[in-house]
Image 1 (cartoon, rainbow, N blue to C red):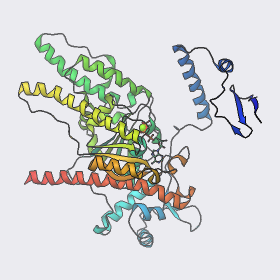
Image 2 (tube, rainbow, N blue to C red):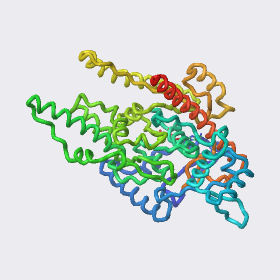
Image 3 (cartoon, rainbow, N blue to C red):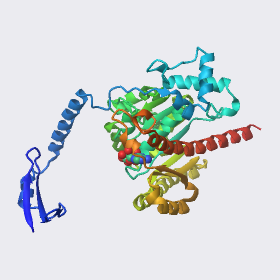
Length: 481
Ligand SMILES: Nc1ncnc2c1ncn2[C@@H]1O[C@H](COP(=O)(O)OP(=O)(O)OP(=O)(O)O)[C@@H](O)[C@H]1O
Ligand SMILES: [Mg+2]
């Protein structure tokens, strides 16, 4: 009862030959591959010029997709929010009270309905106005407005792990959206040249000049100018500022910040050219050894007054510990490290922390040798809070492993687990994540469960944030006494 057959699928170039061990029980596909058949499938060896041809084919395909409306870029718009969703998730009031307040205050947004007498829907801007109204008029005990102590700076949050695909971008994007829904003003900075965060927020980025790159370049340029003055004083020739640096010296953070379809989320986007920074920064550092590259992002955002305009800055980083990530990490007050509850991710996250230690300790050491020699105060990096966060959690399979991770990591591992949810992948092309999806497109139970896990991710983060702000507030009060 053994037989052998093959077939040739005309519309693909691939020829598959299946060998049946027994009728009905095929051997796995990696057996009996005929080397001659494999050879006929093979094309000529690839040279560097071929990459250009492949890239060109992609460009042509991309414009074809775009012309069919399948691109991610076109301008995005955010869905509306229903009375049910607002009173259930966003403003803690009973629906009846909400309706009563709207009726009594005809100047407030009244929402729009799809059918006569149907449910009322509101834009995000309207939700924010309603929240402000309840915050000003409603009961103080009700928590309508989220806490941000006066005089405390915006908090910067970096999401990083050099392991790829652990949920950095998903976590950062969902946190940015939940914080925005919670009434905070948010800036998102994409430091990953893959630009996933940028496409989630519909960012338009032509080249590196519309990314964080010019901020880093300007920081270097400013240093070079000071350094050149010192050179001149010593009688040495100054180092020239090339044309690109000259252009960067004119730019501020405001030039690279763009608004998004979320009225209270702005973006500094990324695209492939941002990767150039990974080559350029070490060259600059060679030319000016004293340049503190790790301070570039923080210094420029502070110098341009950007931090006064936001409550929270979320920084998405690439899966690498390169110069861009170091800048993002050094800028951050809070560091979140997503990882899955698997042996491999636990293992590589451990190595990531080890790399963080050696990177930042060696920067400190380098700086402090000079500081000690000059009798200046030594520098040390410090983060308000660092938390590993388990993502894509499957309680049925990963309970034991995550409990073990918790035992070893203690407080560093957030006790919250971000469940695996199919909702993330299910949302349509134009919609990113749970907060952008219309709950009517899902079974309500599935929606509630998916939303619950990201609401819980936000709650765990918010607890950390409020603790950090409160600590700063108390320290400021104490200092003033
Ligand atoms: N809680 C979740 N449930 C289900 N899928 C998830 C969840 N979080 C992330 N994913 C999926 O896992 C994949 C990787 O997520 P994401 O892109 O956020 O990771 P990343 O760490 O930013 O990756 P990279 O290192 O490439 O930047 C994505 O397909 C995403 O949709
Ligand atoms: Mg990512």
